[in-house]
Each structure stands twice: as C-alpha cells, then as structure tokens.
Length: 387
Ligand SMILES: [Zn+2]
Image (cartoon, rainbow, N blue to C red; front, top):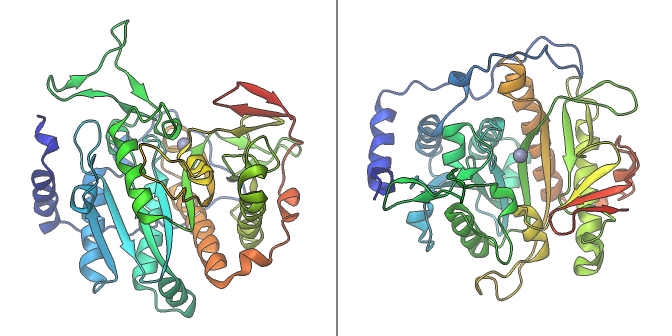
C-alpha cells in the first residue's frame, strides 16, 4: 500500500501545512491586455505557478473555517463511496455550499494539465460561501452546489491530461504490452465496459448519490482564433453531445438539446459585453464538433446506469467551458483574466438557473454564438460521422 492511500495521513499533512499558510488572493489583478486578445505565447511553462493539491487543500480548509458553516469540505472516503481514492491513492475532495433542494455539479481539472478549473471553482466557491448580495443569497437558497476543484489529482500533480493506472501492490504504474505506463483520459472513461480508473468509479458513484439537476465542467483548449475573423477566442462554450447531433435530440424528447442551447446561450449573452472575453462555440477543428459518449458530462446526460448504481436512470443536462491556452502555452501572464472569465461564465450559469432566466432564453440564441457550420461529428463510438 502506498503511503498516499491513507486518507488520515494526507489530511494530517494538509492541516500541518495549513497552520503556517498565508492566504493567497483567489484572483490575480487583471492583466493589461487588449480586449479579446491573448498574450504572446511563452515556451517556458512556469510550472511552479500552477496550484497543486496542497494549495487546494489549504484553500479549501481556509474557506471552510471562515465561512461559518456555509462551506463543508469532504473526501469521498468520508462520504463512503466504494472506491474513494485516485489510482495513486490520493484523496478526492468535494466542497458543498448552499442549502437548497436543487443539487448542482461543478467540476474542474478532470484534465490534470488544464489548471484554471481549480482556480475558478475555488473562486466561485468563495463567493457562494460568503457573498451577501441578493443574487448569491438566492443561489444558496436554491442550490446545494457540489464543487470538485480537482477531479484528477494524480494528473494535476504530474501536469498530465490523464491518470496513470497504478499497481498498488508494487506501488508502480501498470504497464501495457510494450512496457509503457497505461494512462486513461478520465473524460472518456464513463461508459459500459469503461471505468478503467478508480477516479471514474469513485466520482460516478458520488454522482449517483448527488443526482444533480445540472452540471458545469471547466477545461482548457489550444490558443484559438475565430475561423472567420481570425481574432483571438478566449472562451469556447460546448456541449459534449452535440445539439442537433446523433445523440442529444433523442434524450428525454429533446429536453436537454433545448436546455443545453439555452444554458450556453444565456452564458454567452451574459458575458457578451465583458471587454476581455471573446466567446465562440467549441469545436475540434473547422466544421467539426464532438459527440462523445464516454465523457463524464455526456454520460450524465445519457443517464448511464453502470453496475446497477443508477437504477432510476437519473440524468441531467451539462455544458462545458474551454479557456484558450494554459500555463504551458501562455506562461502565467494571462492567469487573472482567464480565471475570471470562467468565474463570470459559471456564475452566469448558476444565477440563470436559480432565477429561471435560462429557461426563458430562445434556444435559437445557440445559433448566434460564433461558429462554423457543423459538417462532422467527432465521436468516441463510430469515428467521424458526417452531419
Ligand atoms: Zn479538458
């Protein structure tokens, strides 16, 4: 057993660090950049500037301590899921905020090398826990938000996209036939015949316990330019089962196809006039969008019942946010505004769902968000499908 498999040990470590911790501001001062343009790429990634698991723990414990009970932090070991740790034995953390009857799933950093989902979810968590404005009070009364700042702690610590399957007896990576470590993209691992990684089994079981009404998922993409105008895109809005595509329209009579368009449309309208944000629809190349069944938020929409853990077939709508660039491509200069655009987008989604404004949005707004015509679906079940 790896020493990391002991939850009490890692908690003790975290509390030890906490004693001497100095609180860091959640959002750095906005970088002085022209509206909607990205800084010059850097080829020296400042990895030390990426917040790690210990940073997250320090921040979570501080927020929990100062929120007067509004924020509750738990490990999945404490929650009691059958699988409760990462492949390498790290604890999996969730923070709950709000006391409403409607449950919401907010996750960051399922891809370990996409760092700002962590920063953005912690920032949103702090506001939800402490902001006294009517909008935040309404969100707390409507929702119980399950904030997962670091879905993939092993990948985050290693700055890799996926996780590495681990032989706990040998305390070493499991190897494939050619002697290479076996890695898993956790965002392709929810599906019948999948669930290779312990993180997937743990978070899936937790999802079946929470049964959220909707989910939001934060990612990074490459440095993207608008396909038509050539201008920098800072944020892309996506649905992992394409609206109007091969899968989504047939789920619940098209309910999520409509609601995902409205939710993304609402976020777009609410962030449209923010000077530093330039938003389009997510794609994986000109004219090509994803329709993946093994993605976490896809499986949520499909109401996946794995191992009999979801016998009632719970499902929920979900969208994701893709920030352009990351510490590898941009250095650390753009951090403030990249984190802040995620905070604004997530907050717009939460507020719009709390007030019901999302359901009032014309679903056709989806078509007004900048994009190229969809000609292909990139799938994880049938390759490339013509639209
Ligand atoms: Zn990602």
